[in-house]
Length: 258
Length: 248
Image (cartoon, rainbow over all chains, first blue to last red; front, side, top):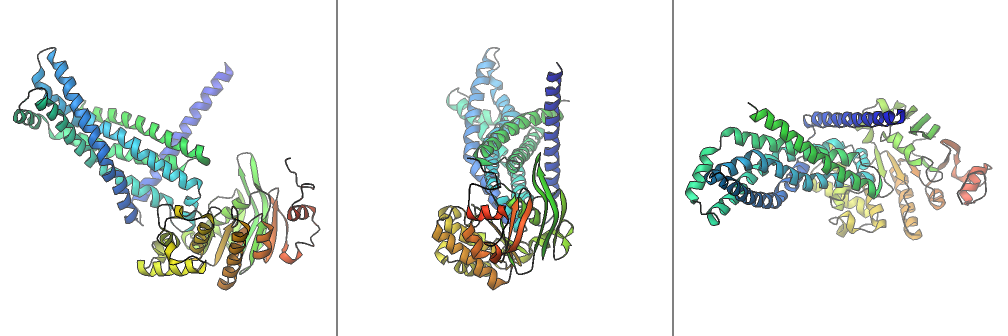
């Protein structure tokens, strides 16, 4: 009994220590965001890497999800003769939830993993120590550009995903289910409110921040060797995904609980 | 002058440095020898501030490094890492000119490239290497490029961490000669970490042996072979028998 309690206590303490380290890392990263120097070239490279190169996976995810969502809503609505609300529900589902959440999760899979693996490899090959000896702060050179790029670019990716997701629903509705193209688009446009779009883009920014932060944090704190790099990569994606889903719940509560 | 006084460092229960005293005169080349895992790399990382010592003081020209302006201090240092530690995402010339492309020593890109090409030439690498990425270079070429980066900003103090590890004997000899030449012509203070006795004889003015977390012996390289310390004797002759415990 005593041993079990001691193990639980140790696990809780370890968890609290991890949370504390993550909060300190976040605070340090934010403090560096506001202080020069700012590495513009690294920021531009990060925008390209995390933003532009994420477009194909984001677009395909949104297209298929929008199409599947339209089919599900149509089939579900048919049970109580409400098929005609499919465009509105597809739009609201994509913009409020599936667009930001799925893009966030795909972003975590693609970007968090690549940031964590890259930084962890730099750590185990002493490249981060080399940065320090070259009078360059790793937090400024590695973390800040990625964090800023992900936070700024994710709302754009979510906006793209929202549009493509609605397009997926539109294609299914007009090509498979016999909806009028004009009526479909009109219903979608009339039903969406500014708050839906604001919540979607806000979620995008928060999820982008979380995804990049987790990649940087676990990369910087990687253990040595190939196993350390692998563990850092895996853990960063898992934690980013869980935090994105938790943040999604909190943001949904904040925006729509009234 | 670099001075360490009673420097201690532990990682958990593993006390790596247990009170290191070491003094390196300006313009001298000190080589620190010792077995694997004796804390040689930790020692130079403590001087650079990459690892915070638990106790003792590290001073450069009489100033405690923990209380000095870190950027100004690091601007005086160059370092060649064991695996060269070149940045994978940058071409070789940008690795060499890294310090010249950003920060306090920033200068126009064309000028930085010109200096990088000169430094690459100094270590025997031609301009055709400049636009390659580190992954496209052999181990010996990476070491040379790392050496070029270490000297690019004309530092007053240069550290070399296991400069010949993983190289064939000929390439190791080339790197040793380059280090000796560069340190002499730049008048730099140098600390080299190695367990390669050929490197010691090629590079050192003075030698210090680190064992069990302390400096076991220190003196001019010329006295190394006549030293009667059994630990030093066992180490420099590579004997399995002696006071240094070995796993067999």
